[in-house]
Image 1 (cartoon, rainbow, N blue to C red):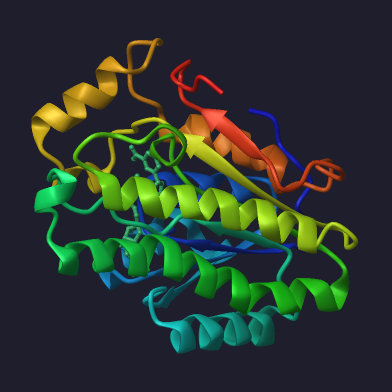
Image 2 (cartoon, rainbow, N blue to C red):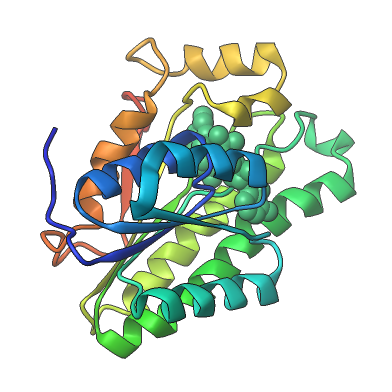
Length: 248
Ligand SMILES: NC(=O)c1ccc[n+]([C@@H]2O[C@H](COP(=O)([O-])OP(=O)(O)OC[C@H]3O[C@@H](n4cnc5c(N)ncnc54)[C@H](O)[C@@H]3O)[C@@H](O)[C@H]2O)c1
């Protein structure tokens, strides 16, 4: 495993209690970073803390609450004196249904967490990075945000919006030593799939030319470089992690 030098750096990983976020957090800890896990679920935070040990701290945060995200960023900066890295992984899949039958309340729930929440988290953390002229941000989007998946329009719309937000923010911050990028994974077998219909999961697997699910450690590997000092030029970009699915 390649290790990037992250000694003395502070990283926030939202949705870090499990799944892709937890795998990324483990990789950052192995590279020397202090990692603050933000998640809405205290149970998964407790087991993640036990797994990662004293290099990790945890905070129960609902990222769909703008004030809570701002308070969590301030508390993290206060505790560690700096925020070098943000990996925004918190998210939900939402229910599967055709768009003309999609429940408006469910649509708003998905947009509130997957798009508005991403805005709140990035908005809260960026000032601490600007103040030190250093930062590396990775927003976890989805291949659904580029290609769309039938019966998951709210998720596709939120992730498409997150890709566009990342590109805009990357350009805004390009004059600083701050990189803002996004990754677009295909399907990985994590708890997020629990909300989805089995036939929908089969559809997504069938779209992956590699013929298998993404492993969460493969996502962590890509993010490891993106959040390192070695990523000194690339910003506002989209990195596919789709096993060949992406067509552009
Ligand atoms: N697993 C996949 O197939 C897949 C594919 C593409 C993109 N993604 C994206 O990767 C990210 C991580 O997904 P995962 O597969 O690890 O899922 P996961 O369900 O294992 O982890 C997501 C975490 O986000 C947390 N979370 C949900 N809502 C939250 C909120 N309001 N505030 C704070 N935390 C909240 C959950 O408690 C959970 O711990 C998500 O943004 C997801 O959309 C996943």
